[in-house]
Length: 317
Ligand code: TXA
Ligand code: MG
Image (cartoon, rainbow, N blue to C red; front, side, top):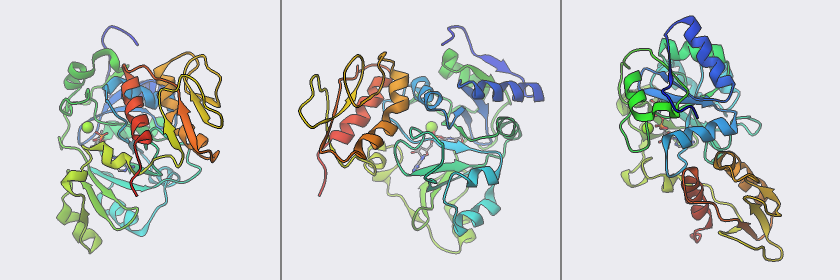
């Protein structure tokens, strides 16, 4: 990480091309959308996505929204539905995010959806965002560009104040128009409003010709535990394993003998990048217990341990 301040890129063709190049090299770029500034990374690059969580200092892995410039490209990653088509035709580009089932062969990082089989996608309206996304070509994962627990940024200066040199560059496109995050609608079952935002529930209901279910406050997105409970390995999970029991499937960290190693060099960004993919792969081996090496409880290790302790928690019914 560079220790000075991030590069401020101008809102010009050259600035957009530079931003796209930084994304292509696996680094982070903050950019304006019509809602708030996003902290972007190549959604298909596991390590780049892990760096988002490191930069935000989030104590858990909330799934991220993937941004596209082009609807046909977006559709390649999800199971598209007639209701998605209706909402997309009405509100995109714009401040609406759709949660859809992920295509099994989509190369989008498992960390983006925190192990779930769905992804949140949107086509933002902001000209600079669209220019960067077009130049980049693929999907860009981007949460709001602030440290965890701070308010969402609506100017490049807010991003500098919150993230400083944790972000490699910021495209300065002036203030954001909407100022509140996108409305999130889940379309994996009956339409459900997952987060209120720039587009109202009433507008959505009119477009769809039906009421939306509304996620209850207690299950709100701010309580990621609720969301995470959707994915847990079938196998039992044993944490802080310093030696292996016979028959266990072994998820290692550091210089240990194991089935898959989160990071032989004890690099927490690498470990986070592999986490969900490896849990899925080890679970598919069909064993009774996945034992996991101790992970240091610092930096990204806090989010990794949060996820692992959920995976190890006693199961309901
Ligand atoms: O306006 C916005 O949406 C901004 C700009 C940058 O696009 N982005 C934003 O991202 O607000 P973030 O990470 O702060 O919020 C994304 C929310 C999270 O709270 C997460 O729980 C939810 O989207 N989300 C993402 N993927 C999901 C999924 N597969 N299922 C359910 N919820 C999901
Ligand atoms: Mg946020």
